[in-house]
Length: 232
View 1 (tube, rainbow, N blue to C red):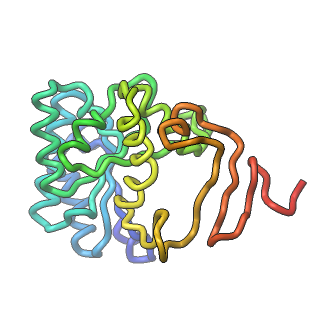
View 2 (view 1 turned 45 degrees about the vertical axis):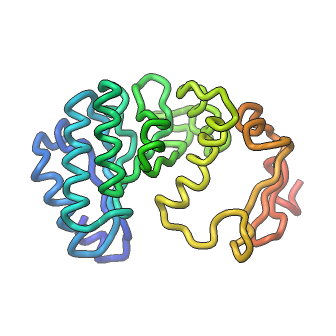
C-alpha cells in the first residue's frame, strides 16, 4: 500500500481490523502510519457489527484526533452503528463529530446501517454511495444517487419534507464535503455541473425518483434521459 501511495494514489484504505486481520491496533498502525507519512486520506470499510464494530469506530476516531486528521477520515458502511442502543449511538455520534470522521452508508437491504438522523444532528458528515455496480457482490447498484436518497429515506423512516431533504443532502452536499470538492453546488462561481429533472421540489424528487433527466457539465448539456447528446 505504501508503494501505491508513492506512485500517486491519494487515499489509503483499511478493512475490518478485527474480523479480517484479527488485530485492531496493528491494522490501524499500518493504515494511519501510511496516511501520516504520505499525507493522504483514510477510508476504512467496516462491516463488523454490534459492540465490536462500535469499538473499532471509537478507535478510528481516537487515531484521527491524535493525528489531527479531522476531515480526512471516513468509515464506510459502519454496520455496527446501526445495531447498538440509541444511547450508545448518540454518544458515538458525538465522538465522531468531535474527531471529524465522516460516515458513508448505502443503506444496504439486509444489514443494520448507521442512524443517519442521529449522526447528522450531532454534526457528523454523512454521505452515500452506490456500493458496487451490478456485479456478483452487489447486483442492485446502478450509480443513481437520487435512487439512493430514496432508499436511505425509506429505510430511515423519513416521511416529512425536512427529512426527505436531509436524505438528498446525504447524496449531494454530504459527499462533496467528505471529498472536499471545490466549486460544488448551486452557487455563483460554482462549476455548473448539475442535473435537471421533473419535480416541484427536493422532497418530491426523493420520493418520485423521476427518470427523465438532463445532465449539464460546465453549463453545457451533455446527456438527456440516459443518452449522450449527439447519439441516437
